Every structure is written in structure tokens, then in C-alpha cells.
Image 1 (cartoon, rainbow, N blue to C red):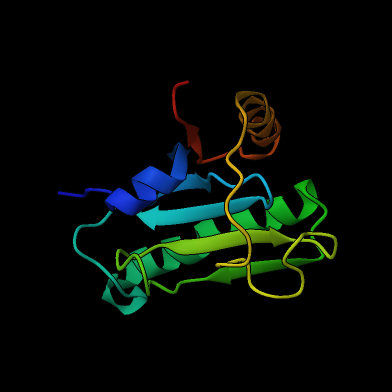
Image 2: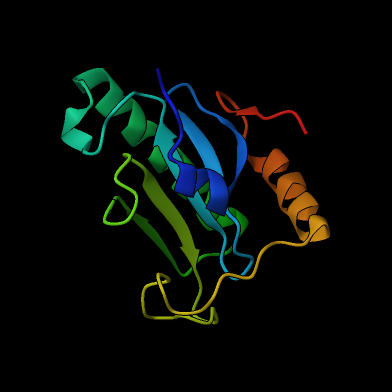
Length: 141
């Protein structure tokens, strides 16, 4: 049975689901930072997904990155799986802009997270509702 890692539960906001992955928003208003988590039990590595799920993760991460790049006027999209702290398989999809506070360095550990205010979170969700269509299903508010 799939269970989301407690650290991801603590640090993110669940936005909804693609066919394979749950989409989370890192609760740090300094960056549009998203995390895709395949809803598969006990996986830590991409190669542990079967071939069909690997392809589906590629489709979901690519589609998400493309939409976010346009929606947030990204200078660069950072897409990565690391898992050094949270071993559960997850993929970061981070919008980077030259004016963000960590540019050009990685976002990890640069600055303390600045949680979204309720207003910022509502604005983010409204913005995403305009661009996340097709096979994405938003979580109930």
C-alpha cells in the first residue's frame, strides 16, 4: 500500500494526482517548486518502476515542466530525483529564474523556507487550475 513519506507530508501541500504521481507543492514561496511522487509502494529508484510506469513518469514530469516553464516564465527548469534525505522515489520540478534568491546555485539548503500564506497558496492553486488540464485531477479544497 502506498504511503507518502512523513517528511514530504510535513513540507508540502498536496495539489492532486496524475494517473501515476501525486503532485505536491513544496511549502516554500520563494520558488515555484513541485514534487511528483509515483504512487507505488517501497520504491527509492527510477529503475525500480516497471517500463510502463517509467514511461508514464517521463510523460508526467515532461508535461508538468513544460507547463510550468511557460506559466512562471522560467529561465531554467530543474528536474531531478535525489533522495538523499527522503528515500521515497520522488521527482523535483523546480522553476528557476535569474532573480530568485538562490540563483544560480541549487535551492536546497540555501535559505530557510518561507511558507505560503493562505492568500499566496490560493493564488498558486488558481493559477495552476488554468494550466493543469487533461489527465490531472485537483485535490478537493
